[in-house]
Length: 334
Image (tube, rainbow, N blue to C red; front, side, top):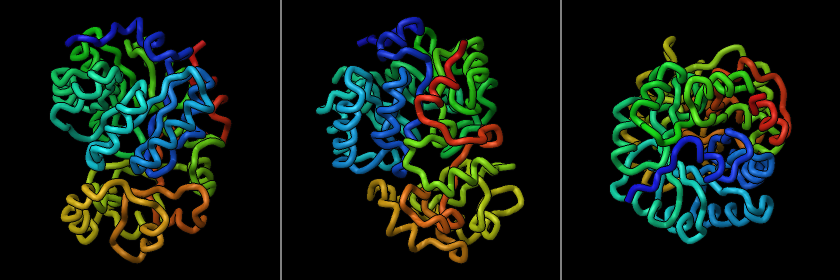
């Protein structure tokens, strides 16, 4: 069944006023409050992965707070359970973004339920597999993005490759998106829209620890590392903190001991997405074990030294916390 839609139809299909999507930041950062606020502002609000029960509740909250707007869910394949898929299908969400892996038959199952499926890719090979698997659209991620990375080159350098593979399917660009000039540049280069993470992390509605947000305001660098990889040994971009200074090499990669712990911990992802509080209490800059969890609202400010402070290179260009509505306006091209 061919059901993908041309680029010119993507905004109408997703009921968007502007070509701006909010990244589905996991670990509790991108919840219903943020997704609904973005949706009400005309963009695509995306729920980050939580437990299946929490996800169902979050979908209901977005629908109540942003009636008539699209509901999108980000599904991280390493932590995906059947319950997450069942919730998305039964709730009839509009969009699912798949990232960081493959699962045979999943795209077809979601599309058969009437769900638009985007796949985040960072290489031409990944884009080819996503299109062959039936993806409705691609999210082309650049290496400068915050959080976990499939991107291997700057976003605008990778975009032409993704567009060539996608054909008439829409391609949204992720990585390096901080303002309307970035959006305009992406659209001029052929993208159908943009996906912003750090810009929406820096909003009142994001469920992020305020000390974490203040670190972004004062950021002077980001590092690409694999330190915060217990259960998920994948590259990610973060701000430096006591943990990275103690356990990362000069090139940003984890030293031997945490690297070994992360490598052997991969199978633990089958347990599902973790609750932040209990695990972050166990973490310390003095111990070489670091989960992928960021510090969320309500956690002690001191935890910013032990947790993953995900941020893209745009952190060096974002100097304030705004409302999600203002963030959408700031990203909307003239």
